[in-house]
Image 1: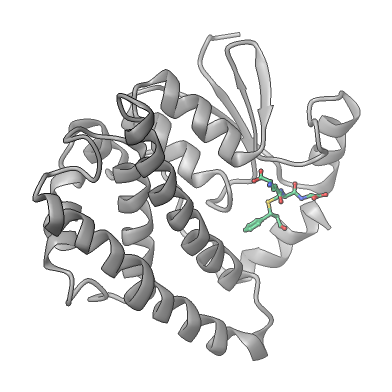
Image 2: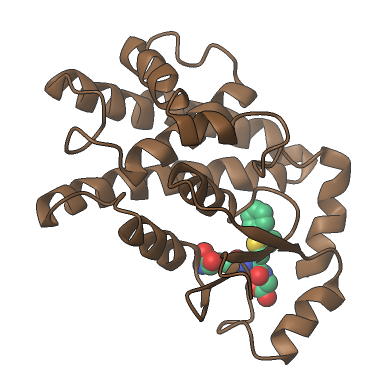
Amino acid sequence: MSGKPKLHYFNGRGRMEPIRWLLAAAGVEFEESYLEKKDDLTKLRKDGSLLFQQVPMVEIDGMKMVQTRAIANYIATKYNLYGKDLKERALIDMYVEGIFDLNELFMNYEIQPADKKEQHFANMMDKATNRYFPAFEKVLKDHGQDFLVGNQLSRADVQLLDIILMAEEFKPGILAKFPLLQSFKTRISNIPTIKKFLQPGSQRKPPTPEEDIPKVMEIFH
Ligand code: P9H
């Protein structure tokens, strides 16, 4: 055991990407074990590694953690990305849960049947532009600080940057009406650990190519 966290998932974003971002932002090196076929999932299930028979699973500090949010909470707390007190944690949790909701829409776009894609796309872009980004623009405007909570980097900043970059892949220019989110994006992207994660060759995953999605779904269904 190298002591480094070991991430078990398929070689793509899905539900594991926010966890990769948090570890990277905290400057924590991690290993990855990719599920490529159903047998890989079956093997993990058979040796009792998956509490609910599902991945993401992360081996960390002697635990085999499952459930994306539980894993993210543990990493954010361990690496001081969760605010300094209960009030800050409450704000961070509100912001992060909003981001997870938008991420659910983005994740499920990839696996929509062709005839539903356009409607799903319109809805997720509407929610990003008219519900979630306006909320975060206002948070930055109201306190005028560099970070969303507590005037220091937290998981809320890391996960907001993750979702902003995904939204821009879907619709470049989506931040046109959000000047504070534009400067936020640049500021957080220049934090050394995050800048390194945004470099080519990092463990950040690209969007799953359309033609590879059936192969990924085969692992789980
Ligand atoms: N609450 C992949 C890409 C995008 C969206 C979802 C899945 C849920 C958590 C096997 N794990 C396709 O459906 C794969 C979860 C975890 C949990 C799994 C089964 C999924 C996907 C793989 N499915 O947040 O961790 O849904 O293991 O038997 O349920 S991820």
